[in-house]
View 1 (cartoon, rainbow, N blue to C red):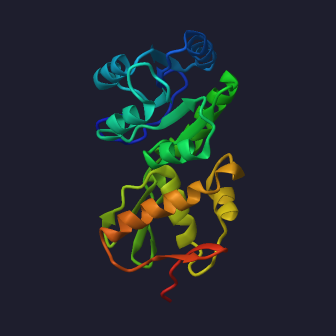
View 2: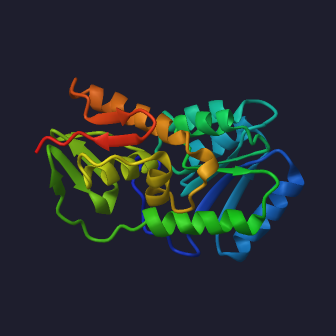
Length: 240
């Protein structure tokens, strides 16, 4: 991903570059080795300041970000990166609490890996992410649904010709609901259809993503397009 444009490029085995923020040297070395064996280049920083300096001067395809850095909270580092880039961010942390996971996703993280973990698990998640979201095949025509334009090839949705600037899970949720207008889906059903590796312990993050999507739609319309069905789930308003 070019951080100036925020556009996913085709990921080639030997050209993928990861920036790793991790202050525990043994974890960093194990992860760097696992990435190297998969043909993924890895730059490592043990502090937030050093990592942000490398980020600003280089081009990377993905950031792996430890929450517990010695000089700055990883959540704040995520905010700094998100201010200028849509690069994929995977949080790496010992914090397993759901509140921390939701906060990370609200800040724009694309995945959340809890310590202890297998380095092979991390590389597998990176591969899975780019298989699903890294395709830059020739553009296809937009799918039109009730004022929305869905550009599947670039994971973009416009409403009334205004780009909603969605993160990957936001895109997946809204696209799924739009394809089934008026139909109510539970959190687990949404997660099963949108997440490439569903984790039902994170069902509550659906509420967070819905909240963010609604806020982006509110900038365009006052109409409540996403409906909440208490105790059941969510649907997109059926105006047919």
